[in-house]
Length: 325
Ligand code: PEP
Ligand code: MG
Image: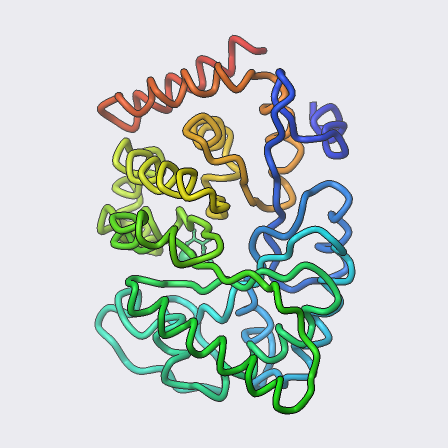
């Protein structure tokens, strides 16, 4: 059965009635092994750049980052590469940087909040990314964005870095897209506004679930409260999908739910036509997509959105899959 699923790897990701669903790859280190999946996907939907920082004993230099970003962008050519800026803090630490001691690190100085405090580190990363942009199709995405204030501040920093490059006559592409991760629920509530002021967004369901339901994603003792398929999760995501579709701005899902056989059909059905996932999910998700028409997926999503409990949604989707064999 494993071999049979593998056969779907180089198939196109289209529904039974021919609707294209864009599949992105989640990568961390940009190793040869990760990049070898390029032929099977439509781009990189999430490049978790913090791994470059975590694997190193010292702060990775601009040159080192530039080389890795350039390699990735070159490999993917015209296909978009969504580079997420440093997401450290929470459970992720660095050997060479003292992080503040906090009672609630996941609610603390994580990701952009930390970067705002370490502006030279932040700008170094953005400089490396922008310089590499000439080699491919770069989209830059910021993690843990929680407000319009955050977005405006990020825009300003992004533009400052561009201006500094201009002054030194260093080349970068002018059409690099500026986007945010949607993983703090507050951002979904204002996604009508957000969709107007960013070029794109991607939903991080791992953190969205944690923050929406107030359940620490790292604590095994409360794992049963961490419900990926809770109706509340799907309903909030539907809100973002509607506003982003209305604004005609790309919205994807790059959290685990996007590569999940129960989550993905419902996300597509509610209008999210871009999913990003780990290597192992590509073939099974392509196979699943090919079994349904878009209309069937829409019906499934509509039904699921009206269910009361996670277990109902789970059972329902699994039954539908079973009917397809
Ligand atoms: C997420 O939160 O869903 C996500 C994709 O980011 P990470 O898992 O790296 O926090
Ligand atoms: Mg996250």
